[in-house]
Image (cartoon, rainbow, N blue to C red; front, side):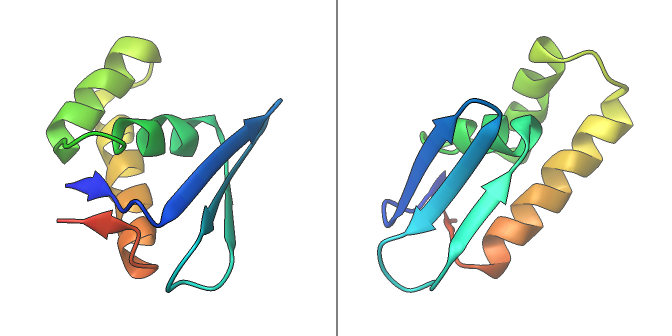
Length: 84
């Protein structure tokens, strides 16, 4: 899976936004975890690889990391931001 090229990302301080250039009409704002996951999606990856990268970067229980990844991926899928 990968982030669709029609989504542009930008970070400014603690704010991270993603804007669609086609399709989805709106802007998505996320926290550092969401930003990290979106950055991982800029290259082909899997949910397991994202969870591994997140676990290497942040100290958190693996079940919590996997839930965060699943939740954020579900949200991104709901707006059509991911190529499967």
